Length: 88
Image (tube, rainbow, N blue to C red; front, top):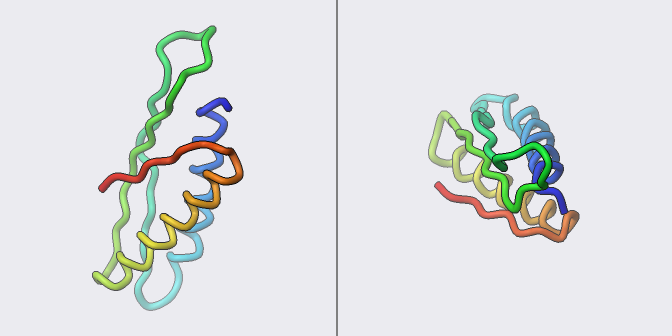
């Protein structure tokens, strides 16, 4: 599997999650800020690294967003038969 295609799916899924969490009394922001992968134009890279942030108005909202993010990544791992690692 091309990790750039998987990364694109991750970014789109996290945008949908951001939209779902950004309404209500305690809006939460999920932002992807970096994507790094490969060093040449003619080879599919082995890995892709994404970086971003989660900002929430409360600890409870942050925990909810973190859990939803984890669930989203588990779903995408199954879809793409890939390993996705989440680090804070």
